[in-house]
Length: 195
Image (cartoon, rainbow, N blue to C red):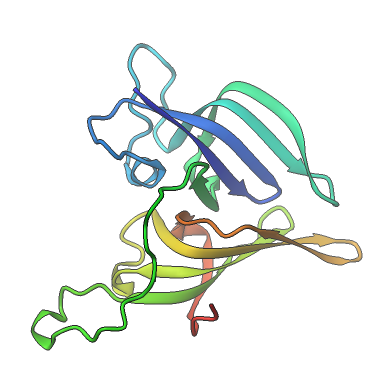
């Protein structure tokens, strides 16, 4: 049984909890769990719902119009995958180089070479909040929606929270891998690399 901590961003909420996963895969992580059509694989007669992700030792923080504050704790929580806007593993993989290759691929192999795209994503507005997410997507854009969640690297996330006096901007630290729910994306544009 593997267990690891994840951070979930959803409009007006930040959820931190642990995933327990029975898996023969050596490197099973959150991204593969999210893209499975069933929930977490668990043994016994535990509650299981398709379309939900089971979390243990959960802290839910909600926005109070100034900042996120811890509001509730749960021993177990089933969280609907469709309500996840972004998620990342608390412990990031180490020793991975994300630099883009400047070499031009051979014409003969160009059909199998995955291109890196610097994208800017705007999510749908929900709960008076939306996100502007910038990051690098490696793969074919035509397959962008093949999975429910895509993975970005070199990510910058800004949440815009509507208040009476305008919008509050909340910026998240860059993470090595962030999974983004493709169903909540309202607009996508390819941008020049600003790093």
